[in-house]
Length: 489
Ligand code: AMP
Image 1 (cartoon, rainbow, N blue to C red):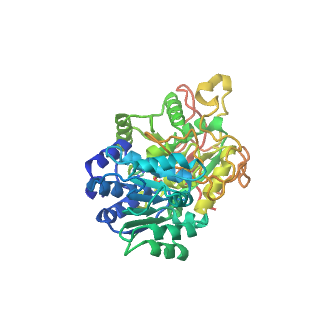
Image 2 (image 1 turned 90 degrees about the horizontal axis):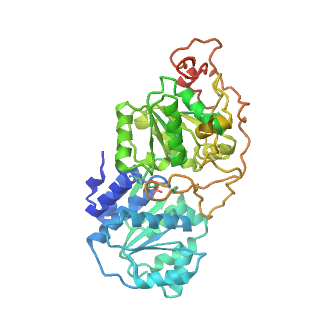
Image 3 (image 1 turned 135 degrees about the vertical axis):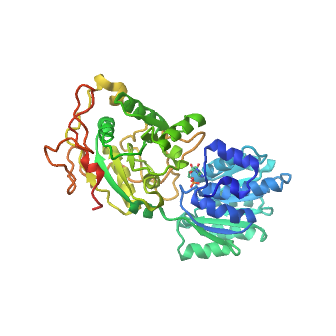
């Protein structure tokens, strides 16, 4: 297994990675960093969410730190080109986070805001400039920026750059750069037009690629249960009565949501732990250790917190909330399909999350089979009775119609309540569609999928919860079907 320490990265960078909570490199990092450290050009196929920002930022920071130079006004040493202002901001945040123990400066410039502040920052001299192509050229034309001293160029999300019509800007930018430089080029896809563009930037590049996310999804047996928000907790508790759920990762969209789920489980007598950006390192380590050694069967996590987790033998992933970024769904369910093993992923979907489900199905090109609510699932509690536990409006729940359609080039929207990680951001995906869409039966009208409903009168057995009585546990809900969810339709 590759470790960050294997790359020979400078100590201050390793320290920053530890502070970020990164335990090991992602596949794109493991592939890219060694070449980039050698000074080679790299041509990478990788999507957002794979960790590609660190794949280029870490070796760049290392190389700059090993060869310190006084900052020159208007002349950065590194240029990172990115298609949107939001992505540019996130990349700059990453450079700042990973480089927090180095004396290097990063600035971000993009259009749509006054240029004078950007000119001032450049005039002071910076090391790393992250820019969208249009504003970059404006600054060059105003002689507020020179690309003469660029030592390393990154072109990120090349396919999106072309989609957005930046081809002419890119062709011009390449003529302004020194010929002697290192170039790192990334794109989610590599059709002919992009590889031709790559050729104009790169010299004898090393090629790296990570598996497109869709293939992960194919290995995982998935299902979705339509359920109103106020029955999600009770549904989760019911499913967890199934002993075949040996080690389960439950995903919520927010840190608050994760804590709330764990509190609910606790009341129901189910041992669970939460892991998210507000937990301290020791707390996270404790939760993980319990999950690994089996003393804690249920780990409730947010997306960011789950990224660095590598636990073998996760039998189930439950999406308590569906993510608004479809790629996150694939990353989540991929946790149960490690090393070729297949796993089960169950998603809870309320009316407002149906649009997210649609985005997910579009990305994975798979229809997620619908599972009915388990029979005998207790009704939603009256709000007064249990507002603390289930009835209160969920923070982090998508507001109806909150996801206005965004075309290419619009800044990606992040869920404001989502876990932004230990210290910072969450990469937004491209939300689509406004209203919840049809295509799936609404909660309460589920179409039972083939062969999944247990026979009436089935005795309690493995996979079926015991009747609730003296111990206050819930009764009658049949969950034997969980052991084998139906295949994709
Ligand atoms: P990116 O693909 O660069 O947008 O990264 C996606 C997310 O993964 C970001 O929130 C990063 O902070 C996080 N990330 C990147 N590398 C790692 C790693 N090695 N371990 C855990 N999280 C990571």
